[in-house]
Image (cartoon, rainbow, N blue to C red):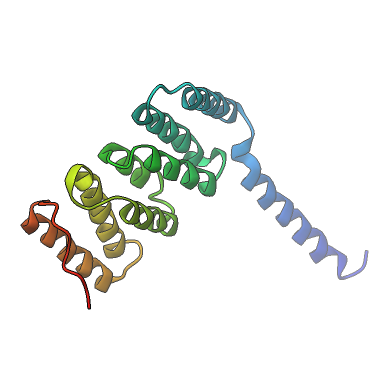
Length: 173
């Protein structure tokens, strides 16, 4: 054997070992159970009678994907569809926050989209407040942006003082 072939063989073996280790969760009975749960959740999505039940079924499917079956991008899309189906639901926002807690950038994007899509007062005030609190916590911890966290704290305080009166904010000139 040549002197250079031994390190090449070792590097190839190490690469294959890492590859097998990474693919390992995709093999076995847990994967089959996850596929069944995803198939069942998708059937409930298609047969949902109203938007709130459709949002819950979308969250169930997203939870399965967020735990590793299909990756975070697919889970983010399903959580976004769930929030669009029932934008006033605090529970849907909380489930999205819990499901995407390991993907802070995706969670940040989803929460900002939710805040842009719903009014912060009236019937959707509780869901908007939940999104604001989750964003503030995200900026305090995972994303470490104290300026944004402080701004969101001020927004939450302003909403609490306003009491959700439904009056539009003053226009900026």
